Length: 282
Image (cartoon, rainbow, N blue to C red; front, side, top):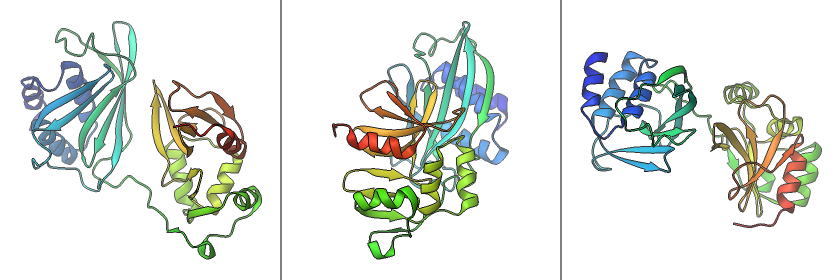
């Protein structure tokens, strides 16, 4: 399908708002021809959408059982496909486009777009498009071996051995290969404290009866406005996170009911102690 035909077909479909169409068009231009063909078919079968607070829209086919051509290598996976920065009425916005289970699922905007989202007379100026993943290829770390028998745990040393001696571990993941570990940290643009790197050299996360500590394969992202954070540890409603693109190695504490992180640390161990000392609130 030509770009002109794709745009014409897209604009006949009311399920996709005019602003969303412009964002999706900008992303499509950066996909390979093979990926574009799957992308076009996925958009063609969209029948429903759901909006949340003017900043997020989710798209669905007519029914969950309707056959949909999916990108390969995405089983049970949510993948951030692209980030589009654009300007409208002298205001700069950011749109993050996500795939779920190999198909287009959502667009998340950094600001409320209800005033411009459905207006056909509004033209946006795309400032940049960053493709964060090639949808035709695998894009998740390989999960390392996880064991629950203490006799099979990797040998611990340094601060981690001291900490674990005071907090019995229920499960532990073996460390990732050093090259893969650094590749994923670089891809996620994470600068982390030295003691968290020390942890990753010995294991890829663990679970105690009170706290979960996440490694490369299990950390996950959360959004605050235009900032993206990766969750490194959690207990109840509290979390230790690292900010994507941070300028220096540090981590933060936040509670899920707060709008932003409330404490900052240059030591992961200190952050972990702070997390445990907080009230274990939901």
